[in-house]
Length: 404
Image (cartoon, rainbow, N blue to C red; front, top):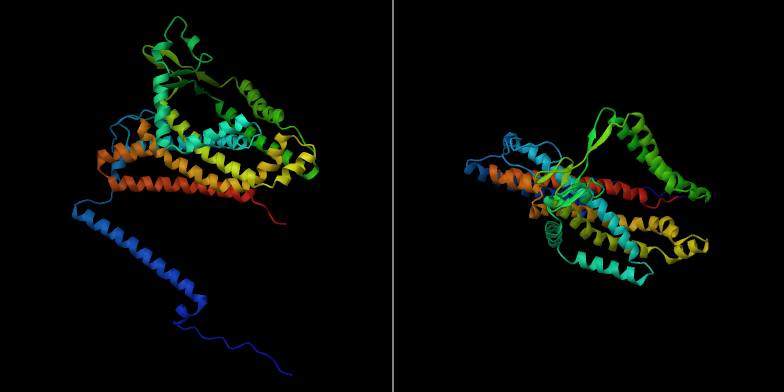
């Protein structure tokens, strides 16, 4: 009887780093990493050397100096005597506001247009096609300028609201649409308002929990519970009850015409609205195509099977088609969110002071710290892009099919 023994293990030699396939790929990757680190180090050394020859250095002390300029759209308190750091924070907040509003609006427009592009109604289908082709084939900067000029030329000045009863020209007596922007009521927070806000946030969470429960119950047992009116009841009834129990701690400061302009309330400038809607409508056209492709990727047999069970077209779309299409739609939509956030840097074209307008514009020109300002700009956009990508990738992983 013969026995087969394993061959003796070969001792490691340096030549194996190139000749042995087990180590060759790691060797090349390590060499590439060394070359990349060396290139970055050389560029950094060259930068510091040139700055030293010019008598300059990298310093961020200018962020603590007074800015000396005003910002028209201020989500928090700010004056011209505030620091450059404060101005930078204002720019960051303005950028985040546009990015958040734009992503929400673009998603709503994109999903709606993507579904309607597959409508059986010829007129609706062609109208959505015109919307998609018109907006995605024209540069977004052009749409920003068009919407801004339309707002400033078509809407009346604040003086047009003067008369015996100025509120009669305002929407619901609380909203004024002018060429200087839109004036809306401003909430006044009093004692106990935090409790009301907390209850509202809890109600929003409860709505998502209820809708998730109804979906699970439908998939497990086939029992369909109503979702519309229970969701509205959960969202508003607890908040309204706490609001009146706490003695109405939240009131509204309504805008009113005093002199040549409106006083009170909150002014949303036309530059913000133009940037918001232009980015949303432009990005929504791309999302619509992603949604349409995702729906068409779902097997038509799924729709026929659901229809054979007696389900209405709306429920087929919401319960059968869209949940499967999301697995295909979400990855390209992440890229559209990132593009929208980066395209918000075009805000300077209409005078909206985002981060590019504050830190990358006036602050850079006043202080002459171009390298420091550009590095901070790059860091911010990198951070916000990675954050959006991380959040959406978590959601995408939850939507993927889980194998048993």
